[in-house]
Length: 165
Image (tube, rainbow, N blue to C red; front, side):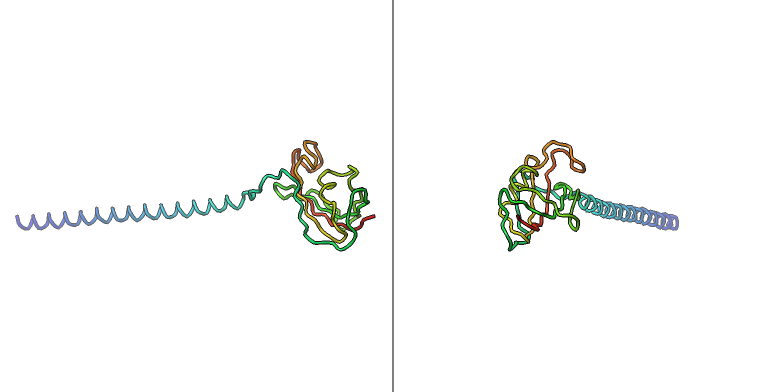
């Protein structure tokens, strides 16, 4: 009987080792799954963050920023201005139009021939200067439908003043 008992104890010990090994393998697999899931979550988080447009503040007033100061004549109301410009949608940065390198755009400042944001934002600019204008909808096209410009859009312009007459 002692042989049987020793053999039974040996089998019980072997079975206990198998159960313990299975438990350790299960814990290891579970830990590996958790690590892989966490890595996937981090990758997805950063991938989604990169796709989101950056949060921009809402523009409710005209924003004027001189990118380069000119040294020539200063633009005043009633002056005929000649400019190069590029227009982007403020919200997503889509370029809508540009005349840079082409024919300059000419208009009389303050006469209402352009959007209010230009009439207000270009006063005081000097020839040779470049100015950035961020124009809210009420000083741009408002709810009008314009080619490439959704209604109610805030607009960003970069304007280079070429001449004042």
